[in-house]
Image (cartoon, rainbow, N blue to C red; front, side):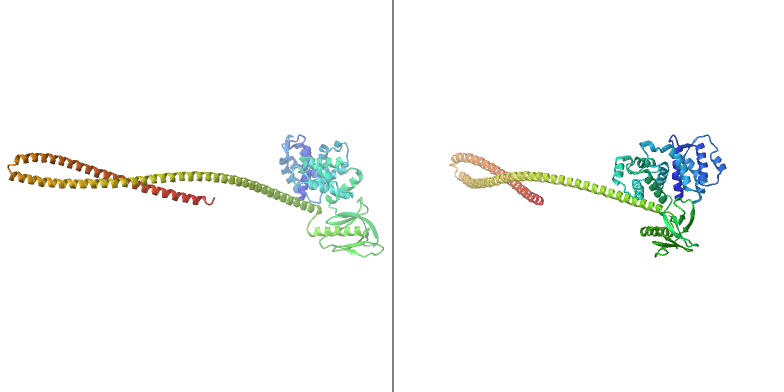
Length: 526
């Protein structure tokens, strides 16, 4: 799956290079030529029948990358066998197609790297780019690659210059495409004052390390197996083997040491006039070697131990593993950053909520103050009304008390007057009785004394007249008594009404006092 991903990246550049109009589509005739070349460089048997069958409607109509992918997967990528072809030749084919259209080293007026070095940087870019299209290398990987190149030249990368570049180019903060990366290298702003040759050597070293999976390479003295003599060889260490050549051009390979999880490396004491010795033990043989100094021996032993460890872990490439770890670290940083931003956003929201709550609290306090002022004003107004009502009720009560006292005094006078009238009536009744007695006596005397009848008649007439007057006076007295009784009754009813009104007024006053006490109790918490 990793091989397919790497191949697709290079093929993507070749496909887009053929897309002259940048429409996402390529003519069928061009795809047939591209497919034929891919068959050749990937060492896959040509299948012209399948090729013609797939493009049988070849009217030179354009085909999108999605339309080309089924054929690419079925007839090319599914048949690729790792190790059966030269990956560099495949990359050179795709680079030739895309560089012809997109790479112009003289665009900036100068060129720091050669065309061959640009190809190697393109391969390194593809290896370190994200597995998303269009291919982009994130700033962390750009810095990593540039640091590797500077380290190979024993110089330090000017990280500040790189940070300024990314900060100025806002559109490139998420990463660079390969042509932007090559322009950056060719601009010389990061490799200012360095000759092309050391740069080329550094790029070659990094290319061999990352693309060629070379963990370490250099000259070592090796002891022969049969002749037991010492020969200087150029060694190249990869995770799977330690190959050695006659010279660093690697044109004549003398052999290789296969490494597996059972292999080991050990330090040896100096002997045979050789210093800084060590040996590599495999299941079939022990290889003795000598480094130029102690530092080189340590570097070689550590590198071989790393190769053995990778074999034990089933990993074929150190830098693929490192790239995955860096990607995981970036993703972890992004997650932490996102979590931190989310936390900051949440804190900001909480702060805003807190400020809003504080503002609401201030408003509530202000509203409470206003309510307290309004309540105090209302309480003062109600207290004033209560006091005015109390005063008015007290005045009414005093008036009612005075009216009651006045009515009681008037009743006493009326009762005294009625008593006098009763006495007068009793006197009149007594007088009437006496008059009746006198009349009887007169009648009896008139009967007895006929002589004085006339006189008696006159007296009788006078008495009758007096009696009439007396009866009239009696009637008047009775009418006056009845009228006095009516007035007494009306006065009594009025007194009862006044008493009832007085009782109601007292009840109202008590209710007002009770309401005032209850209001005082309600106001107390404030």
